[in-house]
Image 1 (cartoon, helix red, strand yellow):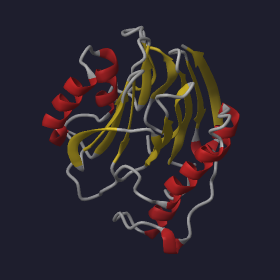
Image 2: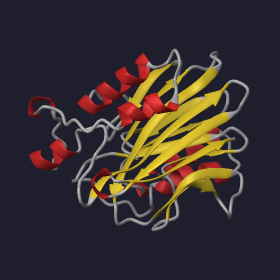
Image 3: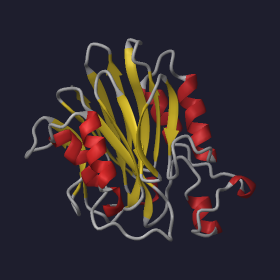
Length: 248
């Protein structure tokens, strides 16, 4: 997952409103959002190459999602980052227990940003600073740097989410997740991948022959614990492949 914007509102009728894009090589085999056969209380997409996932929920109200950190000079992780979401959702540890355990072995993974939560709490952990952070009420964004790093795509998506929070309907959130406009060269970050790639990756929705936005996901969590999660999936050049909607 390469862009997540979300409003955490623990005292609101809609406690969590989240919109996210997962960017990946199209050739990497993936299953869409579904109930997992080997863990039937988990609902998530699945990376078939390593077995993990980028975003998912558990029937008991738990939630997790992650993005990677873009740094071509970082060492390759020995383990897949997607297991960080899968292990939390399929395990039984509390948030604090799990994040302490992950922080102790963060070096085993490539750079990551991890969100984990339940009905009462939402926490953030980054490989850039492996000290877990409990998030207070607010609107946040994560791309491929730290929490709320002001890259153009993140600022644009946060503003668009904020504008819809009075009545956050999935179709409106998907509208800004589909924005293909790249950022001006003068506003691009320099993450060491070169100008052409930096430009390609600067749009909210990425589309090319080999790499791009594979899934757009909207998650709305209500104070009574009910959740609506909708996923749109895509292929090369942003071709629409399917849609899944679950009420949990």
